[in-house]
Picture 1 (spheres, rainbow, N blue to C red):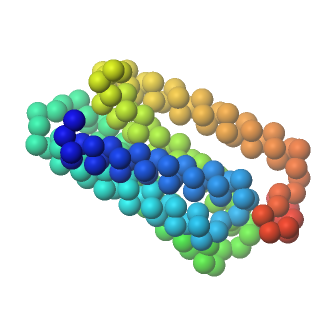
Picture 2: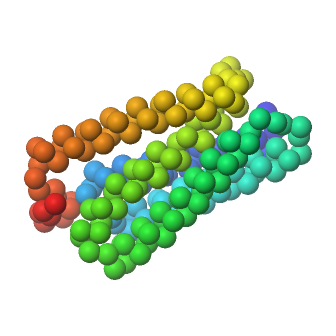
Length: 174
């Protein structure tokens, strides 16, 4: 594995860590804090760095079959950028109601981001090395199952807890 590929893989894996930490920390906390906003920006920076590095590697080789991976990756970065900007605006001047709605959008963006991450992992790991079509289908199935689980859990939790705390002892009503 080349040093450039290792760098890109580490950057994209750090994006997964930062972005997941931000999204699920914010969901668990029930409100948007500066820490989560910074984690979203760190995830975006790492993903953009890793993706640009991977694009450079691909342009230097005869790699083919990554069209959908590249397209979903660029879409994911665009969504992450919108998400990070919205997080910043919501944190700076958003109401508690806006912050509550924000966590649903965070989850959707995280799920959308997982599609190209999983495709890249399934196509790029030599031990797995699925063909692009199988990797796309597998990533969509995995992300769909995660979405069903997360949103079903949210619905169940909302039914049990008509009021959600904001982590500071205040109770927010839905």
